[in-house]
Amino acid sequence: MINVITCTLCLTHDCTLRCRYCYAGRKFSHSMSRETAERAIDIVFTEAKRTNSGADISFFGGEPLMEWELLKHCYNYAKEHATSLIVPPRFSITTNGTLLTKERLSWLAERDFLIGLSIDGNAAMHNSNRCYPDGSGSHAEVAKALALVESSPSLRSQAICVVTPNNVRHLSDSLEWLTSHYSGTISFNIDYWSNWRDEDFELLCEQYSRVAQSVLQSYRDGKPIKLRNIDDKITTHLHAESGNCLRCRIGEREIAVSADGNFFPCSRLVGNGDAPEFNFGNVTDGIDRARQQYIISMRGCATPECKVCSLRNRCLNSCGCTNHAASGKLNEVSPFLCCSEKLFIRTADKLAADLYNKRNHSFMTRFYGDSSKNCAK
Ligand code: SF4
Ligand code: SF4
Image (cartoon, rainbow, N blue to C red; front, side, top):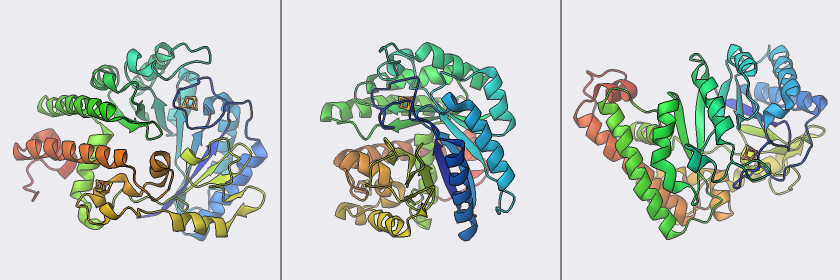
């Protein structure tokens, strides 16, 4: 399998929204210059060649569609300069949908972009956090963007929903809303920056149990919901013997570039783009190898309980940015992360066991490739 480095370009620190949980730093009108973007792409492509890897380009922000002309320029530049890469680059964008139009979507679809549309579910869940600067909710506009995405069947997409203590009570209703408006992959991203109290976690357990029931029923009905949280944990069960499928490669496999051209090991750690803690170079001086090695040396999981835990190869325990959000350290798991990972793994296992024992056709086809196979579980 070919290793791939992702170059995440934070095209602007500005955004049309002011989501209450935003980790992307202060919002101010400051965009990446064309020269900075080109230099960043050059450096990542050189790094890909040096390490015999592929290189993908991802557009992030702020809201990257605020810099539509720059985005198109970056795409053209990357295509033009990718000729010596071992595989052609793939492109993706994470957008809040407020500036998505039919024309823009067609342009992205024609170039095989993967679109991550941030929509937190139904209006009650979404508007709890995803607001305009005046505090009003953005659900009506983003629901229109979701409809546009849904009407482009060849488009690669996923709906990204951020789950926080203040919106978790709407989770199962939101899954229902999303699946009645969208047939693609849904991802529930837990907000690990938030303070999850015991009662919030109880609510998460209760809601997630309802979510699992809906997913189970969808398999029984022959129209399985594509929920990444469940699917990924089932996949980790099938591949657990080959090591931690979720092992984080922070410092190696992603170079996130702030609008000013500073390098960070993950898009979630860019913030305002000027914090020295995780900075490892810039477009002028290139990659700072000493800083890069320091970040690599800090990753992994140093929590003693994890070393003897039977779930360690199926758990997010080594995800640097998740750990940092929850515990303040790249390699230290927080109690909430541990509890939520156990919840997700056990829920997926229960659901999978039920479907496997009944040789559910949709389940067997999705995870074993052949419904007639008699796989050992
Ligand atoms: S849309 Fe994204 S970048 Fe903009 S405020 Fe919301 S979370 Fe932050
Ligand atoms: S479930 Fe908890 S103890 Fe087990 S590996 Fe994950 S974080 Fe560590």
